[in-house]
Image 1 (cartoon, rainbow, N blue to C red):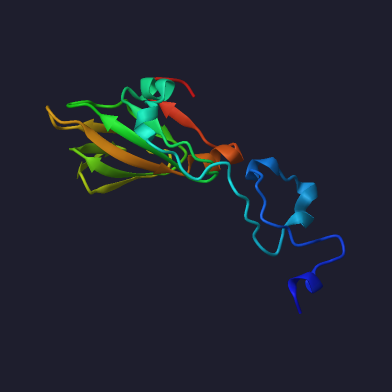
Image 2 (spheres, helix red, strand yellow):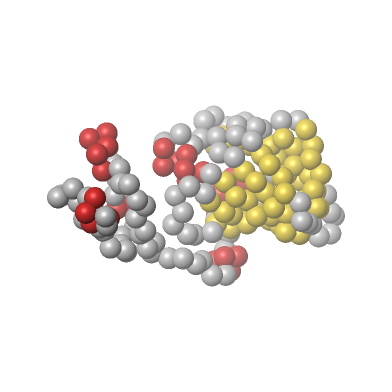
Length: 171
């Protein structure tokens, strides 16, 4: 029996679509539209070239007190940013409802997670749990530090439950 033979009369095999997944939103009335097979939807772009050449995100970098470069791809569950710390730079304490994994590209320093200091250097990965107060310090007086941050922020933003708080500021 083929896939076509197993479908009801009002269903059909959907060809590869080029629409963005954001084009289709579901409500509780659409529960019957849960398909038995995944549907590929070609996103509007698959690559963000020269991420750092686009420049740091002004507002976010200002809040964090260090340059942060956003990777601009149409992901809906994970995000990636490139963070930079100048020599001896210490970030503000902050927390958020999304998890973060930092991969250190260059430099050395520490990340304080809920009062526990975790030393890192290039090649290390650091986990920051959800809603944990944390901050980062570059311990070199002469060399910058850079890291890749991967987070599940878009997933929580799409669900309406993403929160971020900077120490000393109200939610």
